[in-house]
Image 1 (spheres, rainbow, N blue to C red):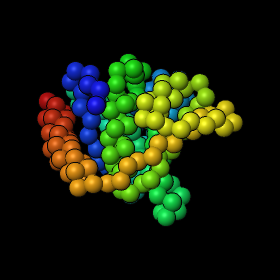
Image 2: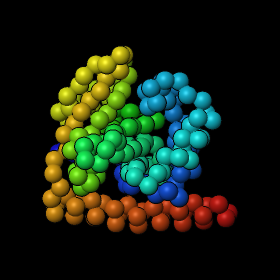
Image 3: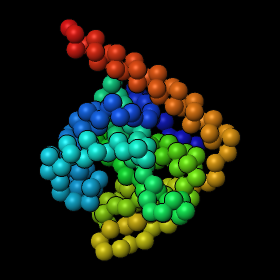
Image 4: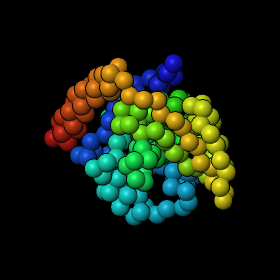
Length: 192
């Protein structure tokens, strides 16, 4: 069962052309949210550079969008040798949108994407004092281990099925159409 999203919010895949939206989102994160996302204090220049590089060929990013503004992001990347079928997930959610089910919904989309790419394990690292992330990992039955002041959650992704592929294809089609409308809206607003 999926938690309902806050009113007016939607989750969809992000495309490389939306790197600027991602950069703006990262820059809006408060200091604690930045620290939790990146494992320590980071500068604004670091965030700008990270946003430029985040959309690599093997990453999949889902965004939580409210009224055309990106408010939360889940990143999925394969890690290690392909034969190990492992990935890493990372989350950033602006403070005013935390504790509203956004992280849980983003993780659901991330697990579906991991499943459909044959990833067997999904690692989620967080600082030891990041209770929200630990709670989210527990919700999806992650095995948590403590390691040098941080916590690593490991979630096993189920195998892909024709239905799981169809679910992602439908979500992607809807998300792509929404992205096109978002771009058109920004262009029209920019013309006035």
